[in-house]
Image (cartoon, rainbow, N blue to C red):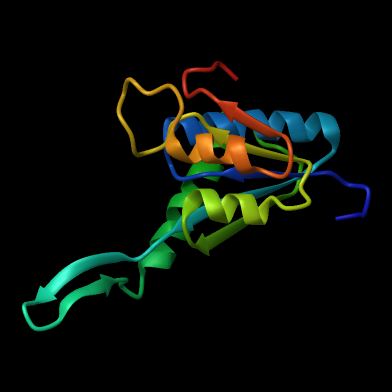
Length: 151
């Protein structure tokens, strides 16, 4: 990436909103000549192990590999729906809380793009907690894409 090339960070977690956000970002990157950083975050899950051990992290060895596979499937699906693309798309999987991690990765980026609602939340909510936190705390312009937006 050249110093003058723009960078767009896209948060992707497999939801319809994330796919719409990635489609929007790819089209925007083509106009700007930007590179895209697709970022997927994950965290350990804690489960009760036994009465003596309390809770332990459930973090199977293949958890990160599964997250990579999901990310690859989403990126490949979106690229296929657009008929391909010649822009550079870099893929990153990062352990951490989604909003905090995306804000940190987007430091110095030209834009941060996310879906309006991801896998969590209630159907009636218009803006998910991650997109809301990013809108309030992001250090670069933020674009929040609705999942039903025809991109």
